Image 1 (cartoon, one colour):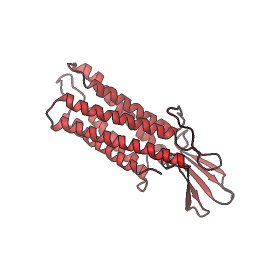
Image 2: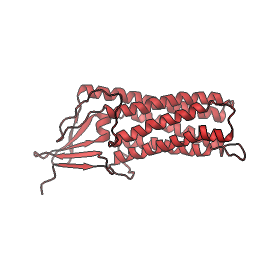
Image 3: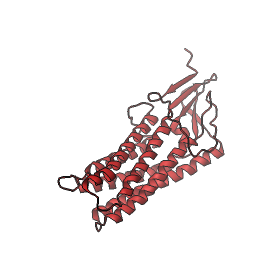
Image 4: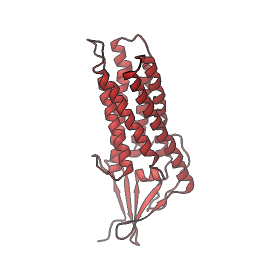
Length: 280
């Protein structure tokens, strides 16, 4: 039976992998993450083995390297600063302004990393019909592509970093009541954590080509997504523990709040290191 000329795979309405079968027996595979991170297509021979990878042009590859360096560096530095802020909160002098300042600097790094991740999607080489070479598009600072899973994942991530910025900025406010603290500081924290978790789930769907998470232990991209998602889970645990009880005017658990932030931040720092190697 003759194989189909074209097959699309993905999660729900999103396409994350396209396969073209050529008449000469070769199979060309485009995968969303592979194309936007490494600028490559897989070309398989008649036996199913990967014969070679075709890459985008030099301009497109150089663009991907620059964006990846900025994004990975920003998440690494942001993770370290968040870990430092949590350490100061747990073991330092107890001055809330000091830890808030460190958190805010880390938040700016996360903002940069989130936006650069979105730029990676917008400016990644695009596939052509029939499995032709990847084409480098014109540079864009913004774009709206909600039917692309990679765009949706990075957009939600970037939005989460902005919401975290509200939480971090409000942390400088003094003399707040318990209700104001929970509304202005705790609520944006929880919303930001939810957005990070949603972004991570979408990233898993992109790399697994299905809605359910999978295990691809030999894939560097999978490890980047998994480590960051574990960090997001720890951030959420930290946020829930940071709720201020109206009856006692104290946090649910200060130690869990600080240690959850510290360990989650180290996960993002590690994710930044791993991401630095996921390049063309």
